[in-house]
Image 1 (tube, rainbow over the protein chains, first blue to last red):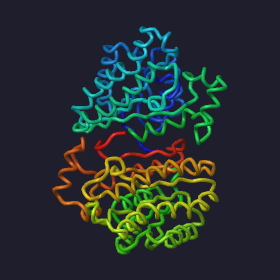
Image 2: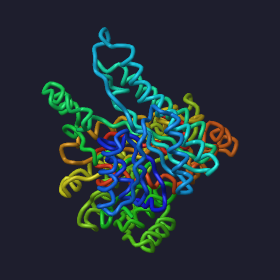
Image 3: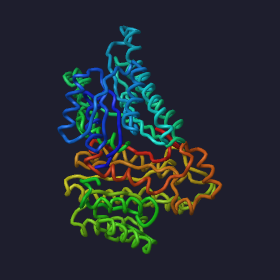
Image 4: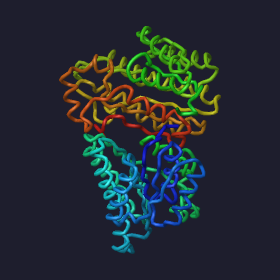
Length: 229
Length: 254
């Protein structure tokens, strides 16, 4: 595997799903991984899991929507470890409702978490990475921003914006030696999608339209994050 | 080191110079067995083979003009026979041939460009499928180009169109071969400093390209190698098929 020994990474939304998968992969490649989520207790358990597997991890509990807390965590990490090489802005939420029943507050909540918080975390990362003249920012996009599905208008709008944001930041930060990429996962069997996996019709649709026949396991997206680091 | 590339039998067409050579040596560093295909550049290919062996891999030199379909099949079969199997095929051989305005394109030039860039990749893939199937699956990696999307530089319509074909065929083949556990992906280099541009692009053209690249520099062949290792490794990209990895300093974004 690639060697990320000596590197420091922060992964948001790292207590479950793809974020947890990516955090494990980065730790396995030798990076010290700061695991972010809101639930401090869940993070402690994950830190122990990584340590038990021979990796290095720390908990960084904060709500990505609290931009001041995110800034403090990023600056604190860089100060403590003397560097911050990789930031994976992955935390995201879903809300399902037909457009006529979609409340503005729900739309805003999804945009805040999936887009604005990703942008804010990238901003804080850039403040550390620009003087260091190197860095890797990875954001979690989605196949749904390209394919679309009904009842997830806020999610799709937010992920489409993340794809565009990736291109803008890649351009803006390229002169500073910082690469910005997104991973656009297909349909993965995570907690976020439990309702879909249990929906036979949707499950059939995924299995039918995926040549490799069906849902991806979390471990299958993790190496990509290491590759982009 | 990428563990699952060790001892893998890899064939790279057009591996004597440029991106193919850089990829071949990178596979060598990971302990793979590499079929180094060449056409006119035997001397350069020998040097690549020596570098592969020095890096800890095994190399097998295999010559042939891939614009001839019979040669494509021979190159694939000889490599599979030498290694006793084939796990990865990289269809890298290709070229611009000549920059010409559309009014002066002859049927001969059309055939030359299409046979070199398109037919060779399809025939090599077809020849490789039985070997990959026998190995229980594998990875085919095509080499397309940023030209497939932006239409190419001056006088390169045939080349750009041919690469568009390669990109689309990558997706079609990915669907067709998924049942055999053969993944098909592509790497799309941007402007990379290789004999390709020494041959076909003026310094002024290269300066012009540079101005369109966010990283504000041309790429090096070595910087493409990682994408090939990644797509060849089941461990790293086992759930990816039908995809095109763009290695272009941000020149063109999906």
